[in-house]
Image (tube, rainbow, N blue to C red; front, side, top):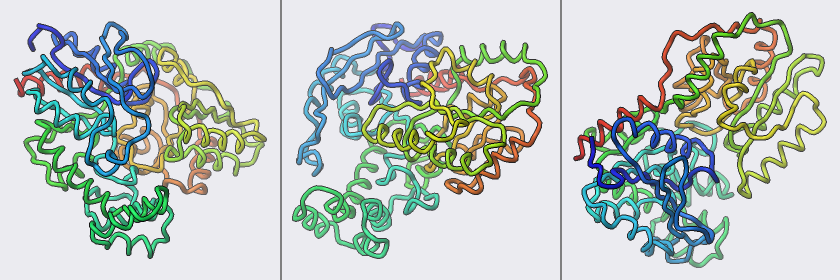
Length: 448
């Protein structure tokens, strides 16, 4: 058991409940709850980009906030300064010497400088990586947006990939990747900020990413990967074996218990229209447009529905959501529905026949696939990253070439033609956040 004189672990996350409900936020909230029976108390700290309170309470956990300027300054972009409000973050670390600092994000408002500050403040440091943002300038781990990358930070290669993403033709992008960093920096400073400037600066940004990664490894006592592909990518980049930990996601214990109860009372599954659902962010990398296009390619006489429960409030999410709404507007089989609350998730999953997970990037989970497996809900998912790791064909569903509308159309058509599987009582024990908390408690103890 860790010391009980105040919070034993500072759980740092770039976003948190109740305002934000993504996979990382749910993971941290469930981890905090599951650690309590292990005798470990937590306090959550998170940045805020708009005026607001310095803290609040959520489900019995104290959440402290610190300010971050919404628009980065030129000195931030050059890597020479921290964001405004960084001193407030340092203040939150005071008095916590000897405790555990557990960071769950790698962003401008919570990244390398924050991890280093925690180490300098005398805290033992744990970093759980929920996305590949510490590795990939593109953010997707898809080389030129087409093929899965091995994750090695090679500045020349990474710069070319980033330049292409920012609009440079492929051949030009490869040339920009060859620019010496000093020339890349000079060229970027001579061009107005925007897509062209970012493309020119890509080599400089790639070199900085490698430096940041080196600092990350130095300042973290342990680095936790939540998927095998990410674990291997970190290892390829030289993270020492003794620092690396593989600890996969787990479903919420309450969700697992409700699913077990509901599966006891599910009878024979009648022959009925195929009921597909999508649960997750409405963002281009999630590939919802691929599933929509695939269903629209099928004859309307084929009985099925796709209900999209999307979340996301950012500008990019709103723009993408509008595209999805427009594409689905004239097809009555596609239903746009409100997001599903955590309390209603088990019911929604038990009423569906399959879930689509058409991601176009390397997921480190996703949590929704684990939840579907616990519910006995077949998955139609991209053969990519964490999805491919979690879905065992044919027991858990089917894996499809990511982004290939024809392949997705065929997969959905085959599932529609097959008998609906009966949800039998689940005698297995799905991995839950209690399992994750036990692993984290053991990890924390090794750092005391």
